Every structure is written in C-alpha cells, then in structure tokens.
Amino acid sequence: MTRKEHGICKLCLKESKLCYSHILSEFLYKEMYEDQRFALKQSGHKQKKQQKGIREYLLCGECEKKLSKYESHASRILKNKCDWPSPEHSGYFTLKAFNYQFLKGFFLSILWRSSVSKNQLFDQVNLGGNEEDIRLRLLGEDFGGPRNYPVCMFTLEDNPLSFYDEKYTLGNFHFIQPPVRKRVEKNWAYIYVYMGFKVLQFSSFRVSLSEKFDNIYLQPDCWRIGLLTKENNPQTYIDFAENVKRIFS
Ligand SMILES: [Zn+2]
Image (cartoon, rainbow, N blue to C red; front, side, top):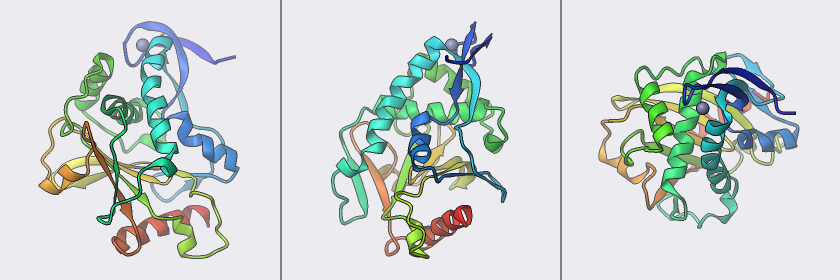
C-alpha cells in the first residue's frame, strides 16, 4: 500500500492526501538497489550507506503525476547512454532526440524538491526567492528559455575507481552525491552526481555566463554532454575519482 499522509501539497498548496515522494527520482536509485553495493555521500566528510531513497510527504497525487512525466522522459535518456550517438572528437556527446520541456522540467523539479526538503542531505540547497519562482514554473509548466536556470551535464569515460585499483569492479559507479553549492563565474549553481553523471544546475532565472557555456547547456534542439577523460580533463577526472574512492574505501 502506498503511504499517504494528510497535509498541504508543496507544489499546488492545496490540502490533500500527500504521497510519500522521492526528493531525487526513484530511477536514480534503482540501479544502486539492484547492485546491492551503493553509497550515498553526505555533504561534508561523513559517509553513509543508504538502503532507501530519501522520501518525504511533499506532493498531492495530481502534482506527483504532473512531475512524473518529466521523470519518465529523463529516465529514458539517462539510462540509455549506450544508445547515444558516439562522442565527437571535441569530447562531447551530442543529443538531439529529446523533449526540451520535459528534461528541463525534470532537472528543475529535482532542484526544487531539494530546496523544499527538510532532510539534512539537502542542507546546502538554498534558493531564496527562486524557490517560489520554480514552484510557479513547475505548476504552470513554463521553464523559460535555455539561458534561464541553465543546466549542463558531464559524464566520465569509464569507472573512475578502475583508475586506482582493479579490485573496484563496480559496473557503473553507483552512488549519489547530494547537491553541493558552488560559485560558477558569478552565479550560484548546484552540483549533483548520480548514475555516473555530474550535473551542473544553475539556480537563477537570469545568469551571467561566458559564451563557452552556450555550447553545453541544455538547448531546445541540442544538448552537448561533456565527456570527461583522463586526457582532456585530467584534474576534474582525478578529483572525481578521488571522491568516488573515498566513498567506497
Ligand atoms: Zn498538489
């Protein structure tokens, strides 16, 4: 039986029976459950192995359904990396077959849920007035253009643990790192890591970014996803590998 509790839905603000909703989508945990070897890294230095995704009573049934269509779409794209076109020499996967509105809705819904969550894993997320703006956008299904709340994504060439030691033979570095706040140029952004992706989500409607970002944030007809390799981005790669190693050691 689905767990429900009576309260105010955080999205539509109506009183209703609330679903026990995930903060990060269920599919992001699924492979970790199946693998039986997973970790969820807490911000700071404490590590914690987590058996269940983090949930809270957040949304009414209708709002849960509204956001779930974004999740289904994102799940199809992220889980099928093997079907993506081969990376270009420039070090990018170029995706063209996706629904911009649905993907943007997915990433913004994760950011918004992280902000309204009371769980300490999401303590770093503080959107200020943008939390209300994103709530209204999720409700009205209007996410603005690609330069509004831009989102960039990177993926690693292979399992960073193999970089250190062959005994770490995880199929696909199954771990989640809760969002970490970071200054990128003059903007605030949050870095999420899940399913082997590193997601850079900006948290303002209007951002001030240099032109190089035009190539990599999610656009309506094209999304270049950066491929991090030991060769093209050694420092980021090593940082990432160190991070993964700390979690599993
Ligand atoms: Zn609702």
